[in-house]
Every structure is written in structure tokens, then in C-alpha cells.
Image (cartoon, rainbow, N blue to C red; front, top):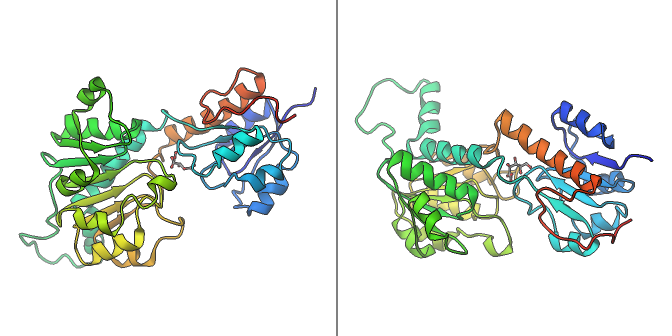
Length: 329
Ligand code: 8YV
């Protein structure tokens, strides 16, 4: 019997592609070419499965062009690149990579918070530019992490990891806002107190965004929300581009209506709003919150395992939808 045909849409670890080749007839993308939707659709015309990253959109048009496609295994925990309703209606399974990146991403949230509050990159640029000729009492004076109030918007696995780091490691007071309140035992574990969004924005010294992207969470932080924040506050976005109105944020930073921001994700990335590139009080990183070698390997392996389990008939390991089986032959 011939093997199912799989597309690996972006370059990933070659040994994991080799592992997939033991199970599937694989077309890979070792040169990491960024295909247009049309090019992707053409490659999927004869495929049974695809390993995607967050940079491939799976929508109704793509599904219509890929009549054999039965599963899209995303190498990411977020899956806003999937039109899940269209996939479910078309009988296509979606999977993601939860858990394996939680601690790495929570570590990075903290790294970005500390770099932002303590003005790490700004001061390094100053030093490298040869501008450091004397010490002064207020040189790059930032804001404290320890003992401050951390406000977390989005209290899933990564949000909880950040809460624990803040409360247990840095003695922070942790407040959070989420669609639903955590169970009391989880709240106690995270030492986190549930508050309304407005109270969080008004009282937090540092606001961390970890909420998944959807139409409902688009521009969770815009001009009105920025206006509620303390002028000494920092804002950290490790969630998704589009959760923050980047243009409004650039204005708030330039006018010092908030102290600083740390951003790992951007509206329209890899493009970055030009005004964010010119304000000094922002730390910018290119969507690397999950980027450690062990974690990226774990993500790629979990995406591969989802494909293998699905075609073995064991069912997907980490599904994001429940399509009616057998809609696609
Ligand atoms: C990925 C991410 O690196 O998992 C996610 O949701 O945002 C990142 O960890 C990125 O989406 C690549 O697929």
C-alpha cells in the first residue's frame, strides 16, 4: 500500500523530516521558501497531510484546492492561522503543539519584561555607540520588577507559568484577567487574584499579554486601554500581533504616556510598524518566545507525532477541532 503524502511547508530539523519519511511520502522545503497561497495550494493538490507553522494560512479556498487533505498539523500552540470552522466543515483535522513550549515561553515573557523595565537594549545601544563617557545617578533608571504588581491578560498555561515566576520568584503581586476565572486551587498555586480588565490596566506596574488571537481579542489594547495605564507602566506582548494596536502604542510610547513596551509579536509581522522602530523606549524581538533548540525540537516532534498517530488510526494527540470522520477520502 502506498504511503500517505505529506507536505512539510517550512524548513524544520532535517532528522525530524527523516523520521516523517519512515511513515510518509514527504515533500519538504529545506530551502525554507515562503510560498504564496497559490504555490502552497498547488503543492497541496495531491497531499493527504501538511505540517504547517504559524505563517501558513489554512482557509476555505486552500481546502477547496486540496481535496485529499485530511490533517493540518501546526507547529505552534496558537492556531489563528487556521480557519477552524472551515476545516471542521470540510472534514479536515487540525492539531497544535501545547504544553511543550509553556515554560520556555513563560521564561521569555520574563526576559522581555526584565529587559523592558530595566532598559537593557536601550542602554546597550548607548554603550555600543560610544556614548558612555560618565556615570550619572539617573542613567537608564527604570522600574522595579520585585515587589511590583504584575497584571496578566490571558491566564492559560503560559499565563500561569508567568504568574508563578512573578509571584514565587520575584515576590510580585499578581493580578489577572481572563475570559473565565481559574479554579481556586489554580489561583492559589499562581498566587493570582482575578480582577476586571479596567482595574488591571489601572493598577498594574507591568501588563503582560498572553491571550490567544481571535476576532474578539483583536486590539485588546488600543488607545483607550493605554490611556488607563500608569505613566510608569510597561506593556509586554508575547501573545500575537493584532492583540495590540501597534500604531496607538507607538504614539503612547513617543508621548511617554506609558514608560516602555516589550514586543515579540506584531501586526502584519514580519513587518513592524515604522513608528515602533524609531521610539527608544521599546524592546523588539522577532517572534522568538518559544525559540530554544530543545523546545523547537519538541514542537516539531509533536507536530510529526500528530501526523503519524492520525494516519495510524490512533487519532490526533493534540486536536484543535473534531471534524466528522470520513468526509474526505
Ligand atoms: C511559534 C508561537 O514559534 O506556538 C506559537 O503559537 O507563536 C510560536 O511558538 C510560531 O508560531 C511558529 O509556528
